[in-house]
Image 1 (cartoon, rainbow, N blue to C red):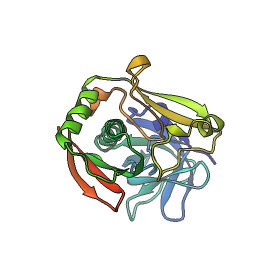
Image 2: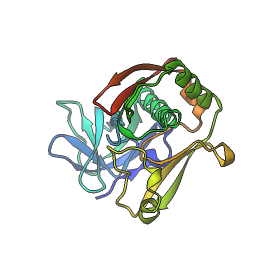
Image 3: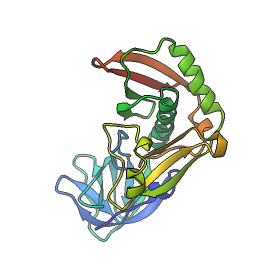
Image 4: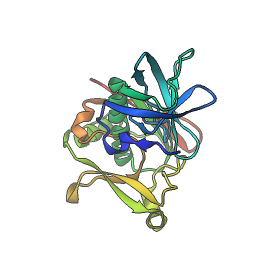
Length: 240
């Protein structure tokens, strides 16, 4: 079975219908089409609510199931809708929008700190990237100003697709050493920030992003922690 990824077609969609096509052993609901992004690439799974005639449940997170399935994890003790039931999906938009803003901001952080990324994490109001950075930046405030300037340029955020072979021929596109690009379908999704001579970033990514950088708003760089001889962890916070 395969779940259609509605979040991939439109990251701003907040409500949709779906049909239950299965259950997981640990209480997940598998739909034929999902608004909810499953945990992956450092981005947490979405939450929200399902409603159907005579029932409802809270979705606490979303995970990848077997093959191309996406499983919506219900709150403990929930009664699941039977297979074949049409449900209404209602996304926790505040949580998702926070993930979109932070995720896009982290792409830009990798622009102002042009070093290999060894890890990362995304939350609804903050995130972080781990860099192959033996020495801490000398001027964190200058980095923050550069990052905010990119955000304020209101650059478009768009997607392109290339084949696995094209990605193999362009290994420099992959910035993150700890997370493999989303492969398996024969093609790989690229997220582009900016266009033409104003393009600032292009890298493989399967997550959700805002459509223009200005939607990120104000940011603040937090702690920069040493995480081993060659690594520094840089925290980023949404500041509005």
